[in-house]
Length: 347
Image: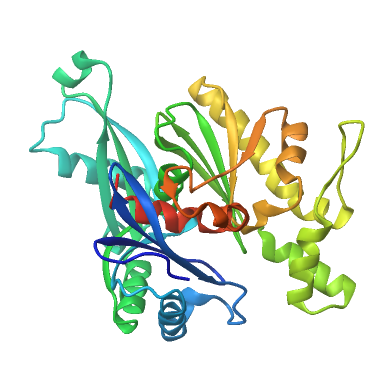
């Protein structure tokens, strides 16, 4: 659906395992305004969109056409689970020697040959000026497989679009869901095939893990055990959800509990590992992704983990017509990555 003129707009494209989501924004004053959005989910193609560039390209063109998007320049996101990231502590390094120092340290933390990777890094601002003067600094390193990057390039080329930049999903989520929040926050992105867990401190992702369980597994189990079509099972999943009881406790269907158990355990493990290693407390959890829309899931996690859990709102800094609010609240978690990508051009 298109709402405003697409002049000077910014387009974010999120290619997931089973669908494509796009958000187009434009700068308005000091903020951002929604131009359009679109998505296509639950694609039948197997094993996934990224393994079939021609299909993904055609689907991308269709989603943009249906949404009335004419902007051909886009920013896209690499999946968190496919990108290696680490914070490097460098000592006595000059600007001249930075590249060689980062490559040397990258060999220690990236388990693949560096010739097969595309590396990117940026320094993290430190409050201690003395450390800066001594040439001591922290560097956020990311590494993406060249083969994966090439697939993205091929998809956009075949879709006759200009891929102007790639970044990790994690950065997009931090931008759209945290904004200027500098506290220690965990973001749980529940996609179709995987759930990505990220802890960001001072706006910088410093810890990431992934578990191979997502909303698609819940849908599949409901479909198989209920002998129903996947589309019906998908809707049933959200209708079933998690019920809040008058006593303050929560009731969760065993089928959903069995599927989200590994996710809950991974969240617990990540919190304990981070808080022990960095001696910092995770203050809250932000849920994102389509599966995060399970009824009362945030309340369930809050009870189980004894921590504040909220559903992420990527529209917090984006203006749109008031009459769209119920719809935007409903689809927000699905579009958090693509919204964050589009916001990159504005903030």
